Amino acid sequence: MFAVFKPARKAALAAVTAVATLALTACDPVSIGGGGPSINTSKPVPVALLVPRGSQSSGDQALAQSLENAARLAMGDLTNVQIDLRVYDTAGNAEVAANAATQAVNDGARILLGPVYAEAANAAGIAASKRNVNVLAFSNNPAIAGGNVFILGNTFDNKAVRLTSYAARQGKGNMLVAAGGNPAGQAGQAAIIAAASRTGANIAGVVSYEQSQQGVIGAISDIKGQAAASGASSIFMTATTAGALPLLTQLLPEAGVKPQEIQYIGLTRWDIPAQTLALPGVQGGWFTLPDPVKSQGFKNRYAAAYGSSPHPIGGLAYDGIAAIGALVGQGKSDALTGAALTQGAGFQGVNGIFRLRPDGTNERGLAVATIQEQKVVVIDPAPTSFSGAGF
Image 1 (cartoon, rainbow, N blue to C red):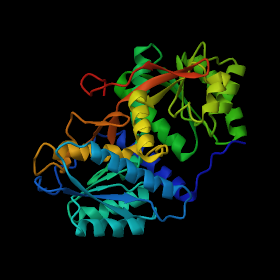
Image 2: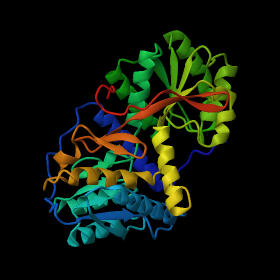
Image 3: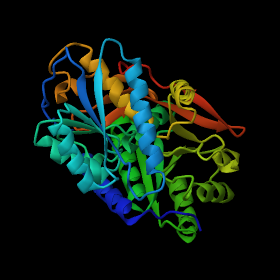
């Protein structure tokens, strides 16, 4: 039996995400306009950092510290821009986050960076909207994006667009989607279908399976049958390494659906944990990575400054400060409005380029990687600018 269940709070949010993602595929992004406060560029810009310190969840204390460390590291890299950073604890709780956001705005914050968890970010956004202040949340949940809330976390949409586009160019764009029946799997399925319609790929079929060993085993014959009947050139899986991926990549080759003959593609990271790299079925599979050179550079600098490794999402705080600094550095009083935050050129972050979209989501420049001889190999580098990058 593989581990697939999440705490009830996160599962409920994932369900909302799935519904929201399906809804977003049916229409164009909705513009939020150019709202936001004016700033005095001759003085340090007040920025509030909302972190999950004080929660009952193990690991949130370390996450909170990593976010703060990364933000301060970014502040040290700014040129001719001063930021007055004030840190507020949310305890990972929506009510506390709303109160913290209100206090931060009352204290003069012109933009909020964080919180992490979707309910908390949504609550903070509502509170900050009363004073026309924008929020750069660390969430990757598109269900909360929009209005004055922008999410910085990497989304299924980003990964799906990158991979369907690459697959189409490589002649592997006739895709059979194998998706878990849980909310995350269904959200991933919706993202793949939406991405295919934008990138020239084709959805040859969809097979959904229950999140259990028996569910995966029962789906193998359906995947094999649909792949053969449709002439699919690739199988796009939503599974995670902690969930169905090891079993899928073991049973499919055994059933004759061999990765040497049909391309395996993954919506999630296949290189974490490192033990996954040794699985025979993942060899040759495609998945996305943040720009590995930039990512490693940030990890090295963080370790040199703080004597430890950053949290996997700690770099989002650096990205937020980098974006704020780049905009404030232009010397304009409207630097933190929605119109400014969504400027098309984007920003340079610790994991590569990114930009914020008018609907509150984001686009991130990702590399496409594969696994060869149990090692990660980049087969299509991350773009260095949005011009001509296929976004």
